[in-house]
Length: 233
Image (cartoon, rainbow, N blue to C red):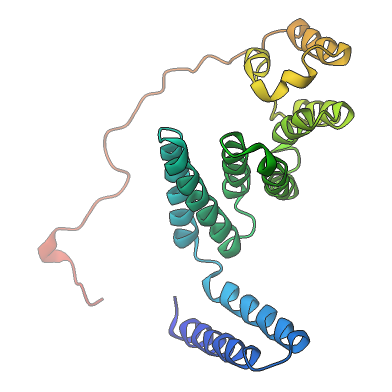
């Protein structure tokens, strides 16, 4: 980061902090505007820092996988922590596809181990993440959205998203779809079985054989000897 950029970010951060202080003393309407302005300032300060975003994503990814091996009460806390990391990642890098998809996955898995009266709202939050993923890359989370609609019993939407997933190349293979418990509500539907039958009828994709390539072990550049190198040039 250049000195000029650092100074600019410092100024933006100071302004955002000032807006928060002002918001605390204002009426609700004015305070809301100041808070939003502050949030935009905070976001701009931490935006465009790819390493920071990657750290947040991989932190969330690790938590997501750890949660799967824990007892329910502990897993709930870890899933919530993972979701906070994915959310923060998206705040710092709004087009981080992995965070959008895995944030939705975390909400889905959290819903499965939560009381029944809380499942619907959690699926709704998962849907928000998956829709964001599809805005980042069309069709990338279409299958996930199909799963949510299958769980809701919305067969028409489920069918549409399955077709979209197929169209954009994000559809799992037929065996994984059939083993997916999220699809249980639609597995007996005529349209679903026709969809699966069509997948089975498709020819296997042809995989190109990799040709052995000769590897040149010599580096393509030569380092100067230490005594010949001028560190100040």
